[in-house]
Figure 1 (cartoon, one colour):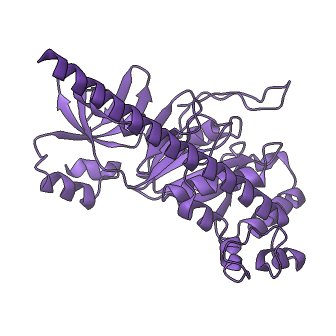
Figure 2 (figure 1 turned 180 degrees about the vertical axis):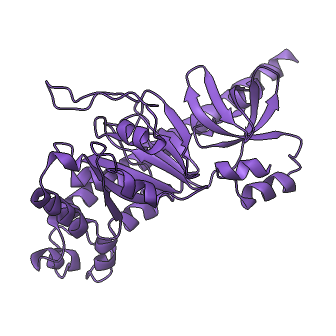
Length: 355
């Protein structure tokens, strides 16, 4: 099991396996996720895998199925592994599922730090940065902002963007990169530590695939130019994949996400908008909406120039979005519970008729 530690395995997982008498299984980590199966790493080999029928049909929701970054228990069937169980996750990167407001989609798991990549051209957007950061905090993942493609602008413009980020998002580490020059990604590589897992997230066209190629020192990911018609990024990453770098760090690349709905708010929004959260404690009313109430500490901070008004607007937007998600999820649970109760009553009536 010692080789597993190079893939990010830790003592908590070892204790869980020992406590639950699961030592007879092979332990692996999901490195790739495709429609027809998975690729898992065991510390000794990389091999195809699929889930057992029991796992497939006993999960209550899709997020319980394996995703890239998961630690899993495996049964060796020769040509491929059967994934028997997903081990407990310590962090989760998820968003609202595209097919329904009340569902969430798990993107990857067991990530220590997320590298939120934005390019310094048309893609730069402070609201989107806060959205990504909120999702990271919700999943207990430490965010790092990566401003990429700095070769496209001059130093004055770069310093302006850096100042805008630091004024609005002061407590998140910021790194600047470019893959145009040989050592352009050197500052990012220095940040990555052995046996820790990182994840690259961001919209299409921000240069995530180029960064992966620079970090792995190989052309492992396809790259493409921006769409000339719309100046939007083309999708070059089509699946999620975990890479082991030469320095021992692990990094997950993900497809570009143009739609990124937040799920439950909780501490995620509070951490992202920490300044608003702290100011709100001094508002006259506990349930202050920071709209027009008297003695609102948040509005007063905006008037004094101590808080960016754009941050408050984005906070309210994400808060409303999260509340809608939580309401829809609660309604879905109620409907599912009612359907389950009705099904049991119907089956009970059928059994009575038989006798």
